Image (cartoon, rainbow, N blue to C red; front, side, top):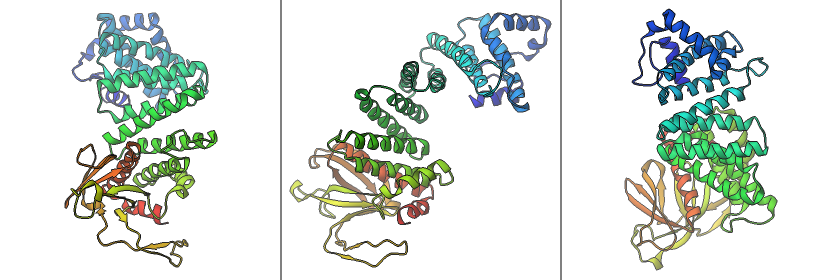
Length: 425
């Protein structure tokens, strides 16, 4: 939507808002065109709304003049061809942008009226072109903005449901859209706060799957990473309040720990974001410090990935900014306090233990190989060859899969030192 405004401003109407759409600018200055614009301005409620927006400052007023000019162009195009879905789509964008230009104390028409009119244009455009995924996506954003104005009401609930349906349609038409998946997850998260308790868990789980899918498309998508952390934190709170574990495999403490992993990763990728920094202060103690993740995986004897199933052992693994390490605890002893003021256990590692250094990782993937023992298979391909491990469940695998890939992404972005600071203090 911002690109539309920039393009209009740069070209002052001489360039099209969408590729392949051209107009002769001289027509806009002819008396015939002026009369047509006058007719449009007085006979279309959408134009009345746009013309009533003044903007909150000089920049806003300048922007609104450009938007009004664009709206007349699209209205003229639709008068010439009522089935011009490109013009309808771009007109909806102008209405949506105008809603952003309404000041909180302005006497201009309400944001809601502009957004409602934008939704009507998106509806018309998608009826004419059912494969216009950008229209479904921006329509969902407009509906979401309308829902936010209504708090936790029944009307808001219906709007959030509409938004999720449009995000779903946008993703069906363009599956390679992490932003649409992230926004879909956010809409589901908002919906979960309104619906009856009996419906909440299912919606929250669906939101988690959307954030996770967004991250799998774009590994460093810090907003989706952070949002996944917040929804897991909320799920942990709900589970704790309920006094019973909703999912027998995942306790509230495990959910809190998972939440902290994603929030820590978002902060590591964007350490200057104050929201991430504040959230990290809240959840850092929920990490299994001095590690990012600790848990159990079934593993073959080191150096023998095709060992018989009977030789595989369920052992503890730890993950930090340096890599994944198998712990074969031979003995433990109390060590003096570290520089951070914490004392800890010295764990003597068997030299034959499995160890994967982050710089050696080539890829991480789920593995449904029938030659692996029962469980959820994980393959970490390294420059030294593949490492196969098995998690207790597919949900447990999701946690390991994301954590390992996030650590690698942080390393690839040159932010391992930030992650090290988080987990070592």
